[in-house]
Amino acid sequence: MIVQKLKIYDTLKKETVLFEPLHPGYVGMYVCGPTVYSNAHLGNCRTYVSFDVIYRYLMHIGYKVRYVRNITDAGHLEGDLDEGDDKFAKKAILEQIEPMEIVQRYTVDFHHVLNLFNTLPPSIEPTATGHIIEQIEMTQKIIENGYAYENNGTVYFDVDKFSKEYPYTQLSGRNLEELLNNTRELEGQNDKKGRLDFALWIKAKPETLMRWNSPWGEGFPGWHIECSAMSSKYLGHEFDIHGGGMDLIPTHHTNEIAQNIACHKNTPARYWVHTNMLTVNGQKMSKSLGNAFLPEELFSGNHQILDKGYSPMAVRFFMLQAHYRSTLDFSNEALQASEKGLNRLMNAVKLLNNINVSVKSTVDIKGLTNNIYEALNEDFNTPVAIAGLFEGVRFINLINDGKETITASDKLLLQTLFKEIVFDVLGLKEEQSERTEKIDGLMQMILEFRTEAKANKDFLKSDWIRERLKEIGFEIKDSKEGTKYTIL
RNA sequence: GGUGCCGUGGCCGAGCGGCUAGGCAAGGCUCUGCAAAAGCCUCUACAGCAGUUCGAAUCUGCUCGGCACCUCCA
Image 1 (cartoon, rainbow, N blue to C red):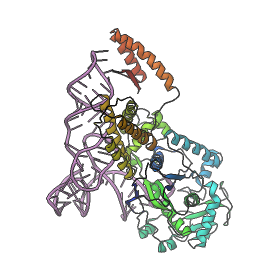
Image 2: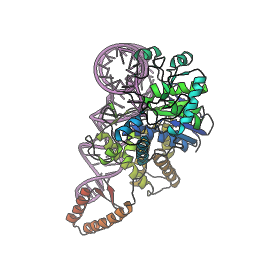
Image 3: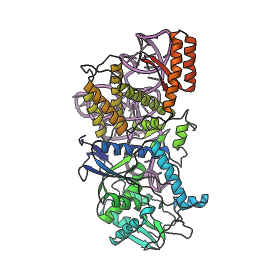
């Protein structure tokens, strides 16, 4: 597959631009990963599913991609109290367990959930605690360069000085003066010079559990330095794509850019990619609002707004039916629509292998292929690509009904297209367990009984079998080729 | 209060100056013992008001409504 004219929306330039990697053929991509102090909710998953498709598509069109996604297991301050403890220590005291026990529990949960969503693991998944030395070194370098200062064991980034030389608020588009006037003064951080200054290294309090030695005494790394340190280490001082959720723009990524410039004299990424939020009834899904879904609740249907459970692939498909930069509103109805749509798509994929070929094609497979790739090249427009797939679904069904025809070579093209887009790029998969085959055998047996009853015109019995199966969750369809079933 | 984004048919969502995305739901037809599935057909929308233009969902202004960020957040 040749490298195509891929366009990406860059948050920094605020426009869609042609993607040209730093080193032809290679892509370095860094995505801000989760803070593992609680279960990943569905909104978090949307971001990682979005970047999974971006990762898959980049590889599909021929790039060799190094995808780095961190695990934040230290460093973030607690917002309200801000006493200098970090989140993990707090939760650990509360639950009477070790901080790293929390980290382990939720890291495992995170991987488990993303695996259910069929996301590919990143190339490197570095942890903040595993890169304390790099973070200290970067902090030192920033101090040496004059953009940070130490005060009483804590090191702050000097935003005032930095912003006089570089456009600090370029990414967020905020007005610096407004920010200065409206930023809340954080308690316990009175050692800093400017209101906007943020900590690179934080002095440990006596009760702080997670602490490391540093040139400034015992402490732990600040809010944003880990991503700068780890992206620099694994992708270089400049790399191609830096991604994350949109809510990271004003603070985390703004500060990350500042740190990188202060340390290495350049912006880390050539393209900034941000995913939009998942909403519930128009409101952002978040833990604090109490409207966050745990993936487990979604799969089991064990939640008040859900009528039933939905499979991970139905949810993944639901996410991909909206563009990654649009908000996506979550509802029972929308999910049901996606589930049925996915089902139709997957049935056509299966049917495709069995359709008959002719000497002539009455459907335009090349045009369809072009449309789908054009959509994906236009800032990864998965909803439009999926619309194209459904056009293909219609083709397949019409051919199956004998209303359209396809040549053997076009059939092969269509099979390749569906395999590559549906499975490789969109990352959808057949949801089958090892029990599926046994169920299938069992079903064939039951259907044989029913066919026999039908042959004897014992419709009372055949309908009874169909009704009973429907109650259990199997849908029966009679067709010329025999009886088929789908699991509802 | 400041900044930014958005309001598209019953629902979810693309589109971003002309060519009626797509999925789901609904109604009709074909097929069928009846269903289901599948196919075909129907449902032609862009918050409101002005303006720019030969032409606007798409550009501009105003009004109304919603959301996000400014505090950790994907």
